[in-house]
Length: 442
Image (cartoon, rainbow, N blue to C red; front, side, top):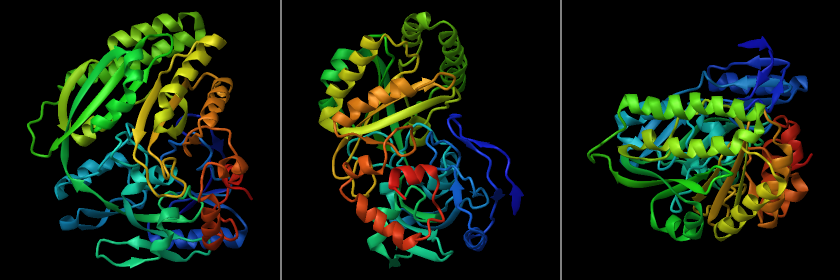
């Protein structure tokens, strides 16, 4: 079904576009016809997910392809812990879809609004040095190429394999190789997590970051600028039949909705009107968040409700560089006298072999900086980016950055190999947009 395009905006309100038209295909064949029609009309076509990327990666000035009609489990092999999902399936739908199969994603980030295709194509990741990002869980996928042809890459739930040599490019393809219509994931038996969230002295957390990250299943922390405290999160994996001690519903509502969203939104708005109050407000936020223990099934621990809009830049650096890079960001904020109301987030992930993965070939630490969406982030983000570049950093594809193809080629050893696959699958650049032209070249 096609419609005249209204103005589309992403969640962070950092990107907007009025597409020429919007297509909402309800079948794989309809996706192929939409791509063929766009190509014949000389219009670029882009599939969008949930709009949770802060970059223009999903901006569709030509034909916007909305895949909510492609959702759910297509096939499964419970014995091998494998499931094929339609590309428009949202992450928040997965617990309900996978629980009857006794399966779960091995790892998740803390936001679950994205579609499975959008999350994997942009390099979404969680934390845990033994686990890679979501794209590492893909064993196969099906996409529609720039010529409208259907191509299977990798392995399906029946064990059939084709075009496996393209998988390291296609798992994390930025939407540049084609429209993904389904993804086959290697999952794990459902499991629980014991969560311990504590405020701790920032200096001690930074000093022990490398050792701590290596010794536990999942570790991350937040740091509010203008404070001396890190809000740590340590998750330990338990069997799926472990005794659960979840956060009571009312307490979760108080912690996550009333304090974490409603009160925090008010603090951000107050800080925007009166920046001098931000250091005191940040110390207040430190005192009312991040001190609880609970045990629950993994999706309920990994993910958190986030309704306060913000903009984000996140960089992956070699794991050993995290303490030094974070110290430099801290010194930068103090030196410039900036009043920053949003915390920095620090995580880690295993090395992987996906060509455009931020963790390609190296264990990686992630440092994410944020600004309230009503504030201009550019000066802050550009200055932090220079620190990350000095530490051989790679920007998250779905989060704001200012790099171009010439710059990115220097930090991705397989960059030109990826471009060769792009030439093969989309020679006419049917899936191009301004963001992809900047980061991949024309």
